[in-house]
Every structure is written in structure tokens, then in C-alpha cells.
Amino acid sequence: MSWIFDKFNSHPGLPAIICNHKVYTYHDLNNRVEWYLLFLKDHGIQPGNVVGLLSEFTFEATALLLALAKSCNIAVPLDPGNITDLDETIRQAQIDHLVRFREEIPEFLNIAPGSDKHPLIRTLQQEKKAGLILFSSGTTGKPKVMLHDLTRLIDNYQNTRVKSTNSLILLGFDHIGGLDSLFRLLSICATITLPHSRQPADICQLIEDHKVNVLPTTPTFLNLLIISEAYKQYDLSSLEIIGFGAEAISAALLKKIKVIFPAVRLQQKFGTSETNAIRIFNNAGDEQFFRINDPNVQYKIVDNELWLKSSNNILGYLNMETDQFENGWFKTGDLVESRGEYMKVMGRKKEVINVGGEKVLPSIVEEVLLQHPDILDCKVYGMENLLTGQVVAADVVISPATDMDNFKPRIKKYCREKLLAFQVPVKINIVEEITLSSRNKKVRSNL
Amino acid sequence: MKEEIFQLLFAQAREMGEETGQTNLLNPTVETKLYHRDGNLDSLGLVTFIAGVEEKISDKFGVDILIVDEKAMSQVSSPFISVQSLADYVEKLLQNESGE
Image (cartoon, rainbow over all chains, first blue to last red; front, side):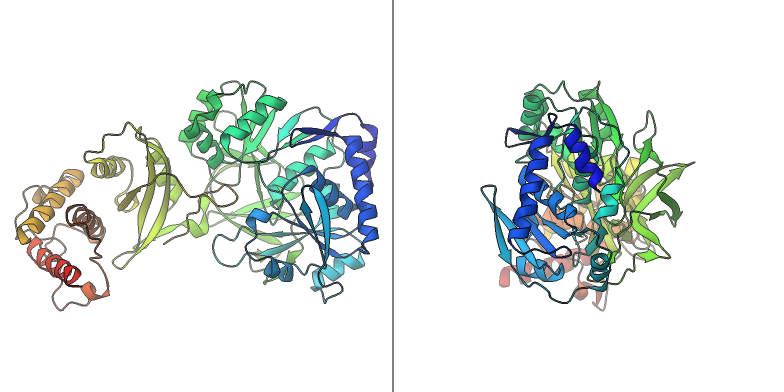
């Protein structure tokens, strides 16, 4: 993995990271990585130790993460905003030492060095490789604790050419999507802009201030951006590419984005925590569809579910059996519709609503609701019902101009014209806003 | 109160008749069959009908009642047979609600 630091050395003057309005060059980054290597040594952190890194996505945290990779440690990036029980997190990830930040100054905490480790961690330690432990978002049930081979993950970005571009990373420091963007951008010595908040107006301000070219985001964020109308108040003309991923996107949303940003190229991204990002090829014209175009990845579709086999698959889970894996195949839980070699993500398997045996995908109902002029945003989910097991329910955010007279019956009638009877929402709730997960996705956990 | 409940069920029936095109529901009476072997609703229709009624009761009486529960399902005679039987059942629920 030393190649990446050589690359930083060859381009010392290029801006690497913009964080809190400060610009750090690749020279600054390399220096800081060296500083953290001494910091680790001074605190007696040995190669192979599991080190928790409690921090927002910042320049300091990035430098420490790279130092941990370089010294063959197993890094556990933890976003303070996503941690509810730190002690439990430390136990689950088998953390030896913790580094947290106060005003960007690192603080070292000794936890339980030398405790018995999971066999997968021991293997990495024996092979003298760096590791990465990530938690799944765990919107339902217990979060999964996943172990990646960090050396292999970073080496995957070798042989990429230097490219001058400025990307804003919206996904978290503890999210595979955020880390994939980080390593990919560092490997091409690009500029990374790190936001201090994820409010649409703050993001727009950063794009204007730092002339950001690439904005990788989620459909949910794009929807918030449109509803907030923040894009109208800032100069976003530097934007060349808007990437989206992490959840299914509706045709209605794609259409709106194209109208607002006619000159911007839309690019879908796809990946899972278990496989890392997968290189895909977007279908020109209909960006909902893509085909997998990655030499490291094989795929197949089983009962509409996408299965992946990648050389970047995680080594395994620390807290559960690898039941989502079968003979090296990872069952993504993503339901796709295929058209030739192209496919489109329809939603998550566990979000499927079962109405008296009939299966309903929330995305299909949401798509129809979003086409209605009165509905700005919506979330469709299953609600328990004694008669049919579950029924379809919808939370909707409506336009202020909406005529409230007979609103719900009108919406139901409209849905009935476009959907099958069992897909029509039985219950419609008017809400102020749609609740999102800490990772900016809609939480469709069935009630 | 009973008359108000009838009016509310009629309104719901008409609404569904317009939505689904079932003419039997457009001019409802107390005898109009709902979920029954010669009823006008299938199970999904009943679920939708009930959800609409619950909403209207909430608007009209300011109370949230749950019509379909274990108790409703275990009645000797189903409350969902006709407008009359449902009105009786809803009235009972509302009386219980105000008695508590």
C-alpha cells in the first residue's frame, strides 16, 4: 500500500482535503500521517491492535486512518452521531485502544489491550495486514460487525491516473460508500471537500465556496435539496457530476433533477458494506438502469435478488454467522428488475410489504405518489393488519397549495387508477417531513 | 350518535363506490352488505373501508378507535357483515371509549 503515500509525495502541492474552510495539501496530509505514526508509537499501539477512531469525517481523522492502515492496524471508524452505546460498540468490535478528538486534538484511551480476538482478526494480524471494521446501519435488529481487509481494499485503487477534480463526500466516515469515495479520490490525488453539516443549504454553500465538481449523494438527499429549494440561492455552476446510490431512485426524482441541473451528468453508484463499491456502467438516457462492469465482480440474480461475488468481499462478520453468504456469493437483499444485462434496483427485500400474500414493493407505490402534483415527498411501508397480515401505508409531505377538501380520497382514487388494488395505500398520513436514518436513507421499517 | 355513525358509514361507502366503480355502494342503506358471502367488499376493500371509517370517526368525534382487533375478529356474529352490524359495533366501541 506504500504506493499511495509515494503518490502523495509526487504531488505535494495539490489540494487534498478541504475541511472547516481550511485547505490541506497532499504534503500536509503526508506530514500528518507521519505525525500520527509517531503518535501511535508513543502510545504503545502495536501493529495488529484494533483501534477505534471516534470522529466526524475530518482531515485529522483521515490522516489517522491512513496512519493506522500504514502501520497494519485494524481501524474502526466511529461517527459520534451514529453511536448510541459506546461501551457495547467497543465490545462488539473488540477494540484495544480508542482515539477521540476534542477540537481536532486527538485524545488516547486505553481500553482492553490484548483481549482475545475473533479468529478472523487473528488471521489478519498473522498476515501483517491492515483491517477495517464497519457496522451495518442496522435499521432493523442488531447491527452487523464486518471485517474488511483494508490493505487489499486500498490496493484496489492502485494504477489510477491523477485527476484534478473536487468532490464533496456526503456519506459518513463509518460508511463504506464514504470510505470508497475517500480512497478512490486520494488515489487520484483529487480534492476532497468534507462538509460539517448535511443540511442542503450548507452543502450548497460549500459547493459555491470551493467550486465543487462532483457531488456523490443519495436520492433522499436530492429530494431534500429540491424541497428546500436551497439550490436556487447558491451558484452551483461548478457541478459537473451528481452521483447517487445507497437506495433505489424514482423516475420522478430523476426527471426533476435533470430539469434543475440540465448541464450535470447523473451517475448511479452501487455497492454494499459487504462487497464495497462495484464499478457499474450507467444506461445513457435512463439512469435508473445500470450494468455491472467490474473485473473483480461476478453477479447473478436469484428470485429477483442480486447476488455478488467480489474479491473485495468482507472477510466475515464478527458477531454472527455469515448466513448472507452462500459459497462465496453475497446475497445483497436488493431486489432488481433486469432488462438484458442492465438492471434497476427496486428496493430492499426486507421492505417488501405482504398484503394477504400479494407482495408490494414500496418503491412502486412511492413512484406513483411522487408523480402527483400535491405530493412533495413520501415514504411507503407496511402496517400490521389482522385481516390481511399487512396493508400499505404512506406518509406524505404535501405542497402548501394543496386543496385539503377530500384530499385523502382523491389520492386513493388517483392511486387506484395507476396501481393494483392491493398496492393502493390504505392509510395515508400527512406529515411535516419524512424521518431519515442517520445515513440519510428513508427508514421503511414495517410497523 | 347512531345516526351520525350511519351517515359516516354511508359517506365512506359512497366514497368507495366512486373510487372503485361498485354501484351497490353508491346508494347505501343500513342493509347494504359489506364483507359477507354476497357482500360488496373483498378483504382488501374491507381493510380500506375500515381505515376510512376510523379516520372519519377521529375527525368527527375526536377519538381514535381501532375497529379491527382480536375482539372484533372473535365476535360470534361478525360486525363486518353490513352497515347495520358495523354501526352497532362502532357505537359500542365509542360508548366504551367515553365510559373509560
